Length: 167
Image (tube, rainbow, N blue to C red; front, top):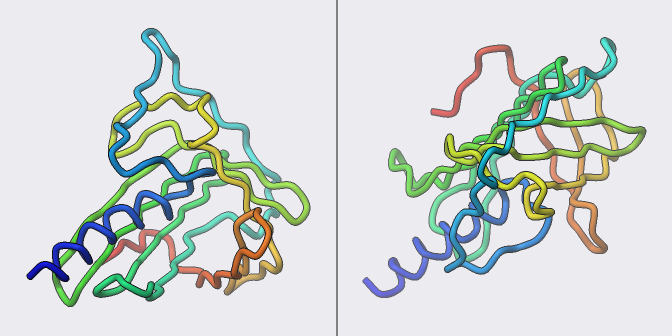
């Protein structure tokens, strides 16, 4: 029983870390709300021929986490992005994080900036909500990327059709 509680707790912390954050936040730290009167940023459109536009799906295992971690990153041509990350064990969803905001693409880079987390406006000026990824390869079926830090392992995302949802 204790091992299961530890595994579920670790999974929740892991989902927070995997959700596109630029730096880990302590597990007991609350969501950083947006300052009073903050206006959600307007996203800038990307080039019409940008291969990163689309739905990208990743499933992976993490040592110490029971089940699998699923992520769906949707990058829109108008610069908006949505990301859902969940820990799933069999049919049961143990935890889920839904984020939205903007994204930018530079040669060899993907930058995401979260402005809403689980529907709540966050302090999007805090660096915790900005993530930079190095893009090794992108084509019509796959996106190979890694976190922008030394020693980061590559992740392979599969392109999914429009309207794809995590199940």
